Length: 101
Image 1 (tube, one colour):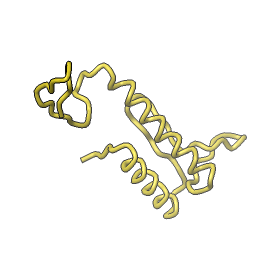
Image 2 (image 1 turned 45 degrees about the horizontal axis):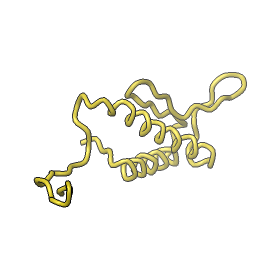
Image 3 (image 1 turned 180 degrees about the horizontal axis):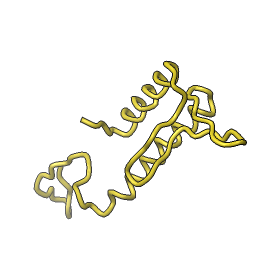
């Protein structure tokens, strides 16, 4: 790609996807992406696709915990939950472009 400056093209610029380590935008972008995963988990619980773990007398449902750059998915031990979690993570991978090699 090149940019026109005063009607003349500049040298070619190699466009690539992603951020380099130490980029000041990285923490903010990570928070946006992590919030997206949290939203997917909440929606799956709301639609009864994923059964979270009930805690306390009031039966508060916990489906995931996030701290810094860690996410812990918590739910009932069932095949249905496993398939739902797999679908959530696969959809998240496709939407965000993130994949752990």
